[in-house]
Length: 286
Ligand SMILES: [Zn+2]
Picture 1 (tube, rainbow, N blue to C red):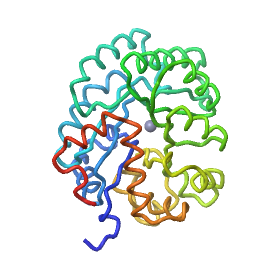
Picture 2 (cartoon, protein in one colour):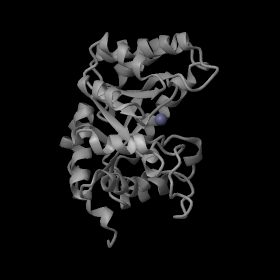
Picture 3 (cartoon, rainbow, N blue to C red):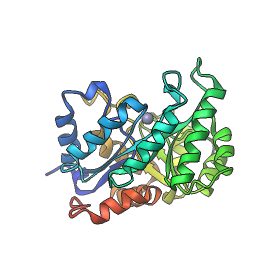
Picture 4 (cartoon, rainbow, N blue to C red):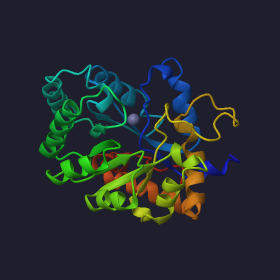
């Protein structure tokens, strides 16, 4: 109880809890996150074969993390394995998931112009088709934006997608402002833990506090201090420690930061907000 971070309720807006590395240790991963004050975690899927498991997983562990939720998608790095007909399957899955309060949106979807061997046209096909679904079902989206800020902004402007999160944001200040104008929050996490991440740290200091959300992007994203603190891999239990560092960079208290990023995440994903409002103990840690 002496850990200061447990006094606040934290939200991890991006954690691949269904990663193969977590199989077998999921119970511990979830318990540890809960004990550190993490009250909400969003699990973005990556491909059709994962959707069912993600749904089961969040419903299984929802008693420990009241705000454990999931999003459905075809991830840009998985388009080579995907079939074009997966878009229809996704549409059906979304229809079936609308009565599940733990289903909160479509993601992560986007464009990755950094990784080679991904045909830009095929990426655009899957991205645009999923944005159309977001518009059709009025669902928010979680965006994977890598060297593709302008292309994604252009695609968003052509549709009515009301809100969402641009995850692991790493664009310019000007691009950040454009996402914010379109109703998006920007995800910050592991990258900002490195002293050399000057541009990301500047964004964290300068952007409106209402536009920032916290994420681990576990388990792939490295953290500057993970090894020296004895961590094995990035996980949601580390979110409060990451957030503390983000609050320091911002120059505000942990308390103010935790309240703001919680509110921002819930605002970006209205179904998430409804789940927490209807949950008997949404923020018991605060
Ligand atoms: Zn991700």
